[in-house]
Length: 232
Image 1 (cartoon, rainbow, N blue to C red):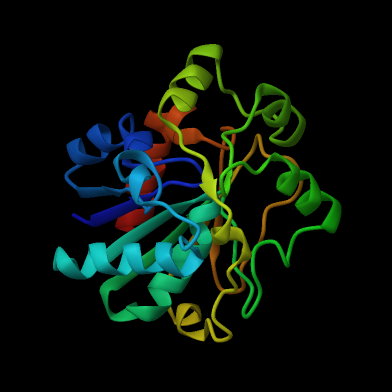
Image 2: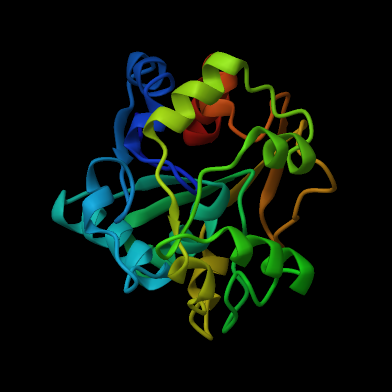
């Protein structure tokens, strides 16, 4: 069976995988949900110095200090960026990189560099105390298609979600991300997301009938798909 490391997107910590980890464990996998600096029970550690580089180092440190090898690294949404950087830093420990409705970093560019200027301006207007706040219903419904979050799901997310440190969107990725191209990679496209999903060269692309947060809205189907990908 596989060693699976789970990394949630913006605002999320290890708690976001509470509905997925039990079925993955039942399939026989070793499951390690991570919380990045500034989120969840590490919210108090976030600061203006928390960057994309910080989060990449969080992932590499968690894998290295736990002595993990042959890791299936699952990165959701924003976490696709730091997970790519982390996998490139320790490729010898990564068996497969799995992108779940994920952002893909561009060499030498920040996430804001790759975002249209009006969108960046709108995000910056919401920033308080160096953080992008957890999204309102209006933002969710306007930007995330058929996300599938019930009122109860939204309340659960907001009760535990923490604002995104702005530096994580402003910090550029390394200029060389080439080490990742040699790794097996899978991109899971969520059917409820608007637009066409990225198609990383050399990566397998599979579809999941779910919205942008399937660990919350469709945990069992997601666990089954991750089990299949991990065994491939």
